[in-house]
Length: 135
Image (cartoon, rainbow, N blue to C red; front, side, top):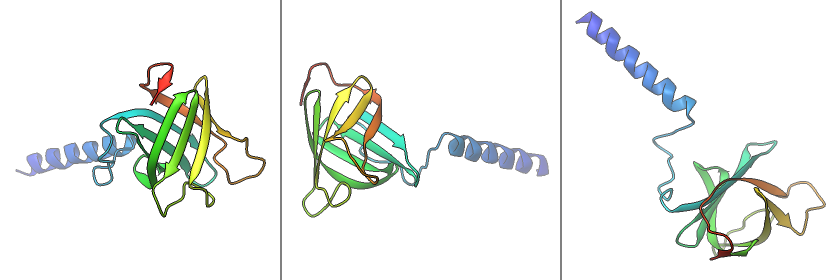
């Protein structure tokens, strides 16, 4: 019986380590992950920035895909992405709208920020949109 208990605890420990190594949290998984069309992110001095565009024309943004703090709608036409935060919320620094241009695998914020504290750019990790973008 002690042997089975040790085996069970060993398997449980391996499972916990595997999940933490993949960066998966069962408790905070974003329920809106199905329908993800574009995913972009970048590291930042305090955490990071993650952006997800979904098939139903909404976006989620936060410090990571499991720590979301902004939602809203988007339009993506040709190479230009426009984000609009839900009413009463902001995307960053008091702004409820942001515009990006897609260049290769980068989303570049427009106009180019001249000061710190802006998003500046995001690296596209997943892009399910057909080119040219008509959403």
